[in-house]
Image 1 (cartoon, helix red, strand yellow):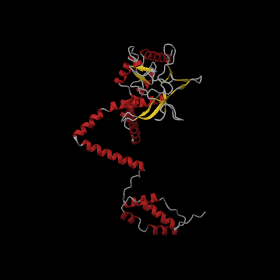
Image 2 (tube, helix red, strand yellow):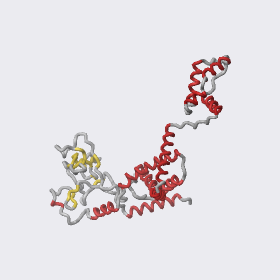
Image 3 (cartoon, helix red, strand yellow):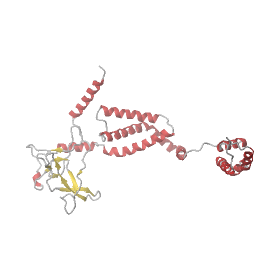
Image 4 (cartoon, rainbow, N blue to C red):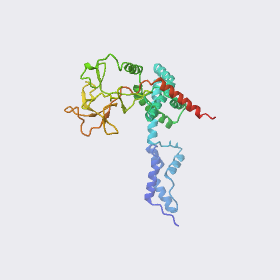
Length: 352
């Protein structure tokens, strides 16, 4: 089979690709290397129609070698180039900071704090796990399984911090560090402080003062604490976790209610003035019998209007009211039971 003859248009395109492969050189050198390239190729291929054009990049490399010119560095991708530029800027910044004795000493001090950051990063990861499995907000783990998880995360964080990683690894660790910082900013304010726990204990101790005279305020309907009307009740279980859907009754089995049909309050306050921006009406829960119950806590509130504050807007969805605490101190007996159960479970896994 006869080879397809090389046409002048193909030679012109080949020469253009060769010049493109030499584009990193000065223009005068490119012109010198490729001077008369099209004419030479046309003459050579006119004598031998069976020849095929070589690879343009290989041909350009041969021209470089014949002229004693160095081989160009491989072209970097867009992301790699940006990464190299950022790394160069970071290196320049470190050198400039190291040039000043004061900033150099500060950087050395910060380097000694890296182990503390590794632990803080692991704690942030622990909080992320807690957000998925329902134990976020605790300063420390509540059982052996959570302790094991936290220790594994600390070991992993230390492992990441002590090793030297390639560029892609450093990038992923940097992304993780940003997520850890954001998690810490959101998680730390949610952890109950000593003052929060003390406030919870004080309120629990004085919740039912025998000497209070709640009848002096209003008509006495509902529940009163130190003369102030209680509009909602939040219950916590033996481990200090918030409960929902709790039905409360008094010593005679009568439903304990804080509101009656037609009760209303404020669904949303204006933070600056503490004035009501959106009124709301308390709504009852529905029992399996179909009856409405006003003793199910925490109670929910639906949006209403200032014109009719006690009547929910048609189609308004009942909303949960924010609890005063995410968690309160658990009962000692419950914590002790959890520890014993965890110990029994561990013993049961041991080979007999």
